[in-house]
Image 1 (tube, one colour):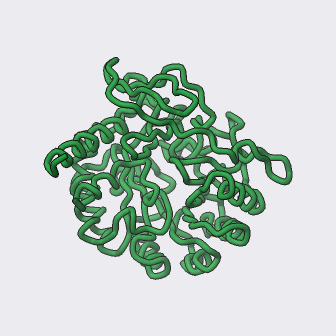
Image 2: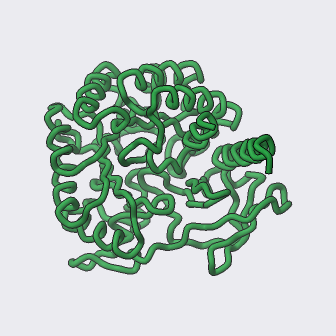
Image 3: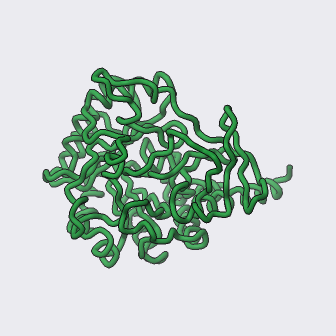
Amino acid sequence: MSNTATLTLQKRHHVLLNDIQALGIRLEGVEDLTIRKGGAGPTDHKAVTIFNTTLMVPVYSATAKTSPFAVSKPTKMGLASLKKNGEIITTVRFIGEPKFYKEKSSDGIPFWKIARLHSKDVLATTILQTCIRYKDKTTSCQFCAIEESLKYDTTIAYKRPHHLAEVAKKAVELDGISQFIMTTGTPGSSDRGAKLLYESVVAVAEAVSIPIQVQCEPPDDFEWFTKLKHAGASSIGMHLEAVTDRVRNTIMPGKATVSLRYYFKAFKAAVAVFGKGNVSTYILAGLGDTQEEILEMSKKLIKIGVYPFVVPFVPVRNTPLEQHTSPDKTFMHSILDPLALELVHAGMTADTLASGCAKCGACSTLSSFEKKHKL
């Protein structure tokens, strides 16, 4: 195949991946324990490998219900036909249930209630499945469903350090897990969860050697960054979600009390400890920030060594924004394409990171745009 033909094929694949993540897929007769309903992170998604790229694809959102994309019931090998408007366009592979899901902790808790498989080889957990902001409408993030998985009894409220150590060790042994991502609901303490993360990292690092990303709001004392790094964390995420005060005050009024100025102070302090690129932030495109605003903020972040992981907002059931529309593929392309070019020029792409959501890349097609610009 000529270089021109290869580039054309890659472009088609790239466009299709972007479309699928924006629109989601309809499931035809698929029941799967790896699809988690409610909770933090990419809930209501399914990990699907398409053209050797694994994406977390929305399957329970309002958009997915009317998506032109659908998949058939997979074979025992996990293979399924991907259709668009009823026409088969390719074969995809569903990421199957990991072996560690069948195991239990030393005190009898199923491992799948302690940590979950994300993408194809990433272990993820929410240490504290409650948040000080969640139950008050004047402070809660309108997109968040962190406590919903407690209602479904698919998790436990607090994962103790020994729980995380046990599940990490077994997940590495049985399933070849490549990294562990630990996030947390925000507690009432001024460290905003850093202490819980520190205790968890210490326990996991003693049990198994695995890259670990920790995620929390900026703590009151930036010495926590050094403590987390020395404990064994290789990267940290502090998530903006929205980039303007206009959207932050409307969508996430409680979290917006932590100012953008303070976030930037924390980002700079964290980069000094973890290094360029190993500090990241989630940005949810589609909450109301414009393309220009997201790109302007992303450039500021890149300049100080922070990786802006821009993902399409996917509404989650039982949240105030459950009927909010997801951004369309054109909007996402208008952000991700120039953003990827900025990241390539900065030498700060997904493949250069030590750990974390941006390293995994499954919740956004940003890394595929990076690859395109590297060709």
